[in-house]
Amino acid sequence: MTKKSPNVMLQTAAIALHGAPAMLTPQARQIAAHLVDGVLSAAAAGGYKQADILGTLLARCTMSRRVTRMAREACEAAGTASLKEVFGRLGLAGVTAWPA
Image (cartoon, rainbow, N blue to C red; front, side, top):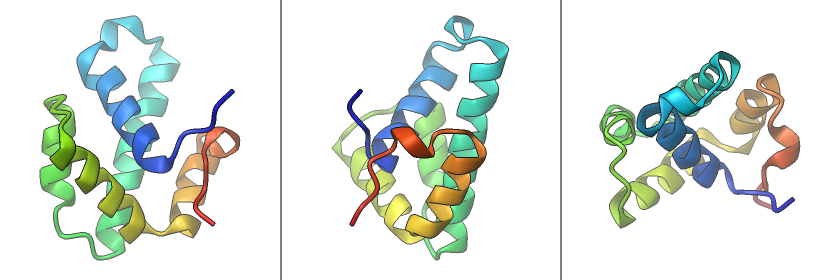
């Protein structure tokens, strides 16, 4: 299995949650929602000023270079320790590629 970066995991969770919710089990829906909310909250706590805007774009399934950049910036603002906590609570720490 190829590990994905936190920002890719964030975007993937948002696409699944908002773009194809009927395809998710209730548990998967809950995990995706907690991942998106957790990362955005950690980003805001880390000083990321556009967390609300990014949340809106993710909820609309707007995937573009801008959203990819914003997701990366949000994860950088959140910091590795906070992201590991969010992903760890959801059992996803082992499938995530963490920055060095």
